[in-house]
Image 1 (spheres, rainbow, N blue to C red):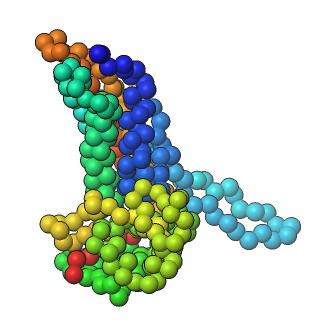
Image 2: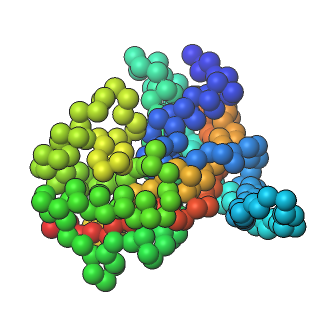
Image 3: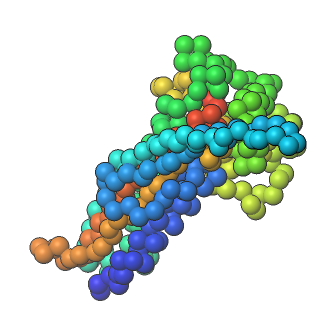
Length: 283
């Protein structure tokens, strides 16, 4: 039995699986404001911005100043990542399976693509956090305990306050061991885990210090040390992606069906001041 395959339907299904699986790349962490038509690896997205507008005092019956010429700047987001999947299902295996083999394989493909995209996004954030928004260092990382892990979240939130980061929609992505420390603190248990489990986003485990806490195994580290725990707002990082081509075919010398697809994406930290980082070792 041949697989009933419609390319546009399967492409949409794969994108949905990616959106549901991403931690660093979800809308709560990155913005998709500049995601337009992406055709191939190497395409770019131009992001424009203007300088600050001056506001002066007005004096009655007096001329106002000349119009202020606005300065503008431009950043380039490069679509420089291209990953593909390509698998084959033998006709005998299809006949013997009681489940939809293709669906399961597509889910597995989405999972692998998620891991790669998440790591790429975490690395992009890692290289952009301002030094003044960093707690600890790779030379002297902090070592949180169950008594002060919550307080480090407060410190990260204060850094975001000082850089005028919007208060609504802030996040913090922590490794599992840091989440374990938080669970031992009544302040987190009382304020964090009881806030509507039904509305939690991917990887979200609670809320604390004005931050939506998310857990991920892709938090950057160096050999299981020097974990980079990022806090911030979605306006900081722009992420664009596209599944360009997904289709099935029958290999000429095989009895079965094969599927291949191409996923391209890129990211740019456009407002680094809206990110903060805690560099920490596991105690």
